[in-house]
Amino acid sequence: MKSLPEIIAEVCEDAHVPMAAAVFGQAGIDAIFAIMETATELYREVDPERVTGEIIIFCVVVPTESSFPEQPSGAAQNFGSLASQVLTDLALQVGVDGRPSRVDLGSANLAQLSAASIVYHYKAGVEVFLAGAQGKRIRQLDSSARSQFSVPTFATLRDALRVYGTENVRESTCYIFRHVWSDPNRLFFKAGPEEVMRDSLTQFLRNRMGGEHDIWPEQNVNEKNPVDIRVQPKFTNNRLILIEIKWVGYSVAADGHITARHEHGRAQKGANQLAEYIDEQLQSAPSRVIQGCYVIIDGRRNNLREGATAISRADGLHFESMEFTFAPAHHQSRKDFDPPYRMFARPICV
Amino acid sequence: MTTAAEERLATIRSLSLIQRRIQFLDAACASATALSIGMVSTALGSEPELNRSKLLPNTRLLLEDAARQQLYAQFDALRRGIGVENKDLRVPAVVWLTALYQYGTSGVGSL
Image (tube, each protein chain N blue to C red):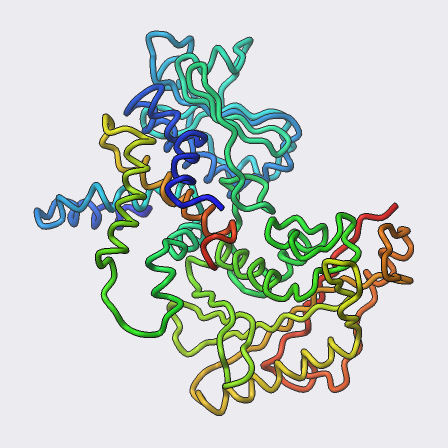
């Protein structure tokens, strides 16, 4: 395990902002922050995934050595107007006033541009900053975001949970969530994967909603049972959202023997448990407006036997569209219980 | 930012009491350019001293001797990695937060 000072030293070595400072000094720092602001504004309007070619954003820092003027002559680009366009390539120059203009790069390549500029380059999900002869790939801190400058935030927890299911769980894209699996083909969970699942969802919610919500993992609602995650809007102090996570599927110990088989009964038990948590909270804090969200991580596989290492597509995806039927169905009988968020985690099939 | 907000900010910036804090506030705000607000929040929550205080329910002073030494070790790593020639605080702010985020999400620092 690395210590924090060791990680700091690594980031200093690998990150793009120190590179800009080292190569171009203060002008490089100003330029790289102007470019990051431009990229953030651009991606608010344009999904980087929809740009089929490459995106280049640059800011001239040594005008005497650049074939581009410090200040582009064109009008500032309105990113809203790009939202509905089909974009193949996009080149933007950030002027000294910080405003971006669309430019034609002509025959200039990235190496020529970066000799006198800070250059941001995006292509097929890979982001790089160039300064002089140096280049640094941008660390993708949020594994499900298309770009480090396009980490969408959500107005509601419901939107966030839906996206978490499709972008982080379905293909186990989340760096933390990946650790729930015992095998590379994602057939069996490790024994006791709850904590990793909770940490994965906590991190996702903090990244996407942390500006306006406090997200707390494993909060005690009574002496025995902790709810997995508690979400509280920062500016509305009587609202409280309780998230309970349960998983279904098989888990195995390190030696490969099955330690738990969780199926429909477990899903129902989790729903009942959350309904009880909500009731307990309502008793202890009657002035609170409480909402319960039930997340089911579904790793069920059909015809799965102990020791299996591979699965067919038919068996692996057998349960993908198979919803649970709940009785009692708390989400139908009470208004403070959201419809369950079942998130199917796909295996790698042969 | 709206014109009204810009005018108000300019007024606040001109107050002498605020002057020495502006560079710190600018660096803090600029860090949200490199990381989302939620990531900044996650990163700060991963700072070992703040993380410890989050986990324990009792009230106590932050940054007493041992914790201060840890923090200075972090700042020393920043100083050695970035150098002291440039005084722009945006660079250490972004590097420190990125490192804290990685530390917190690597399983070393608890969420």
